[in-house]
Image 1 (tube, one colour):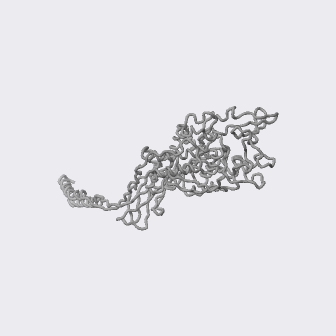
Image 2 (cartoon, one colour):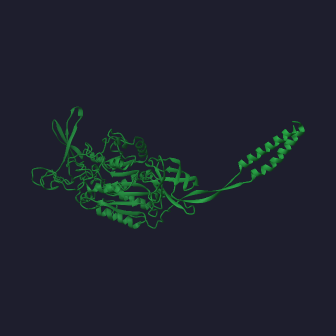
Image 3 (tube, one colour):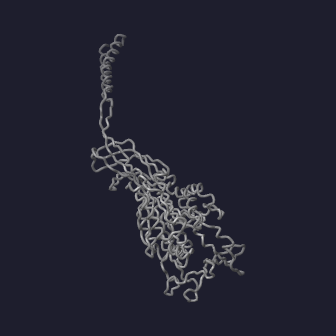
Length: 562
């Protein structure tokens, strides 16, 4: 190819390219529908109430006083408080459930639970339940974090599971009563509860006597206990038919009736009842709890200071990693003197628990209702009641000895002067309960529409630092129709997942309301609308085609010149 031919070829190529190049710059418009996901938010309720004062501060409550306290708080903040009767006790007293939430947000939210007073003598747990409700109402609109919890959670409180025993102790100062008040003929004489313990010596205390067998090397064996009393019914026996029947915290249908943590002896303080859920109080809770899903819950008790987690038959924590993390959290904020008198840590105490709590509330919540962290929170123990003055040698011989205990008053519930101080010390533990409830945060990105199908990427964050969402995250229509789902989300984790929502029909001129979440995390509500998006694209195929034609023309021109 000579120089002249090359120049002509170059000129021809530039000429054709100058015609093609503008075609590359000419935009081609493509229109497509894009989904827009908009969160449906409910604002906080405008606070219109002053701080609520308790009607009966610094004193223990009977069941009537509990109802009055609840009604007083409900009247002050009706938009936050909902009161329900979930059942009745054996003697017909109402068992209340109080829900604290932003009632303007009608969607189902993440749920948490605090239940108090399975055991009659643990009266201060009732006060804590009332304090908890008051604290949430008085903090709403004042404390940003607590307001957010109330806006995004349904917080359930059962102030007393055992209202019959509450009233009996209030009226009779029977600080030993642990069980419910179903009458029972323990001695088979046709009479009920006619020979219970008595203050025989008139010192104002019912003395408990523990019988021990002496062993070699100081390894003594506890045998049984009995109480001070007289032969009330004249049958020659003492204290053979007590008031009190079933330990409600051994009556749940989970590993029921297994010794040593439960007993089938009706005289035992840990009597499991005649069958699982034989008692109206536990049946009321069962029917209530089956309608809800709780990721975390507290059952308040007294008698020691500990956070008891669910254990397996081996005695190990059943959720080892989770419970270890939570225990470390508790260690950070429980009061420094929480176990001062006991001289051991709450963790050691928790791990010393029997392998399972047969028929226990926490066993039932975990195994039957999938609650990952049902915690038995033991909030009070007066170890000073075990001093030599109150716990002393009563009698002994060469093979056995008997210890007498006079410290039942204030053993399970403190002096009234300390009721509120105990609450203030443990507020961080109640904040922790709310913090760990597995709520979710959601956002969407990208997205396209194809026929009646909508696709996007969904980002789900589990806001609980410790507890996962338990179940898959579901995308549903308002009527519950399942559109798609993603994997459960781990605690304190964000999970990105593609979703495809297949509708039976799609009206792009209307919006679609969906809910996202599950029974544990609650549901967030979104509205899907559609907008037409214009995409500007170069016609690449046309450019390539014209370029190829230009090259062919040049080659033909060159070959003809040869």
